[in-house]
Length: 142
Figure 1 (cartoon, rainbow, N blue to C red):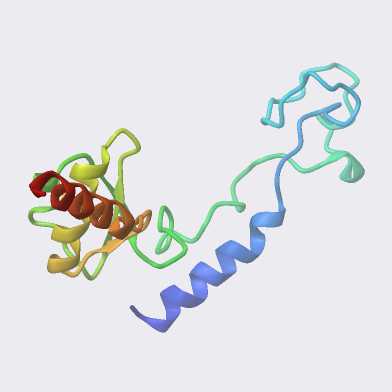
Figure 2: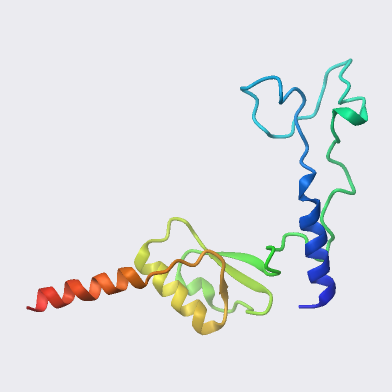
């Protein structure tokens, strides 16, 4: 990956402190921390007083070269089964295994991704489960 992309990813992650606060979020417990446009006629936030918080607008977006990238520098691909790994480029793409995938299929996906040279973003250590399965087979044989 080029040094410029690494630099741009760092610039993007340095600006994550700028979250846009909903009006009166501090005053009302039931409000969620999701942006809603202020609509009041006399609203100071709508009139863009500096102390009342910034609005999301053009200029806060990430650089186009790194927009949508994972902080590791890869674009994410959601995978549900081992056949989804076919034809993926290991230099630009990383794999995220779907949450509904079970332990057995997850192991197959991780193994196939390792052979293809793909990075798995949410890899799990499946060695304890494999060791337990081997022990159960040994006990069944006896």
